Amino acid sequence: MNIHDIAKLSGYSAATVSRVINNRKYVSDDAKLAVQKIIKEYDYVPNDVARDLSKGKTHNIGVVMPYTKHPYYTGIINGVMDAAFPAGYRIVLLPSMYDADVEMNYLNRLRRKAYDAIIFTSHGVTLDDLLEYQKYGSIVCCHDPGNYDISAAYTERIDSYLKAFTWAKAQNVKKVAILLSRNFELSATSQLTRKAFIKIFHHEPLESLLRTDVITYSDGYRSAQSFYKNNVTPDLIFANGDDVATGARQFYLDHHLPIPTLIGQENQLSGQLLNLPTIDHNFHEIGRLAFELAIGDETKQVSVASRFILRNQNDHN
Image (cartoon, rainbow, N blue to C red; front, side):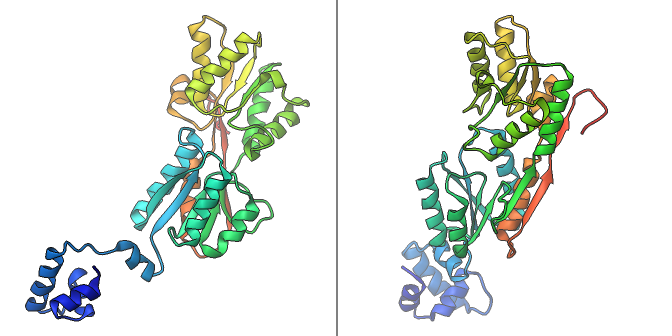
């Protein structure tokens, strides 16, 4: 059933039917009653997708996110959502687990006009793949794309990492544990962490003090447990989230062990309550900027500064 069918059954033109459906003016009472009678009799519901496509827009923005529990992704999503709602856009969350085949499927749905744009909070496909699909709709990534001509909203991380490790070194720590979501080969963020560490400590992070696939509080707890079981006693744990650092802390508390110095990230409530040093990457702002780029007509890259925060001190770097 479409408006042309309703027009035939009601005896009025498709234009008149459209005006009735969309509550437009200049429709006689007789025409309105006749059209509404057919609509009710056949339980007709307008096809929003077809209507949006006829206008050239769906007002759907896809947001690809490998994980749902890490504050990096939740922070960006909250920023996107807060910007999208007042602008009249719908956000479609697209989980990927870094599966390139899954992400290519999302790109092909962009090609088929299921979305006006896609925001990649992170991705398993290559930047070359993203460039190839830009002709089908706006694509935005949330990391520095380097020389690639693609829209991006991202945090400048290196300075805050350097400040965090400089502060750590000033505490006379020798054994620094680093908790990461992905290893150095796969993650640009992990590579920046490694780069900053080497610049300050003048050696590679020790393999025995590295843990990957760390995302949640429970992962932080298990990482500390792993250090203990392997007779590794870090002086400091550089975690990839305040919740992760809190999880590690809880393991040492539960087993009546000395708690290493902790540095978290993302300025989460847990870190605020425990007065943990942290790094705020302003992911909410990144999400807002990514949305603006997604609905805009210009390909450009914007960055936001991160900051290292020392609790109970006047100096917020």
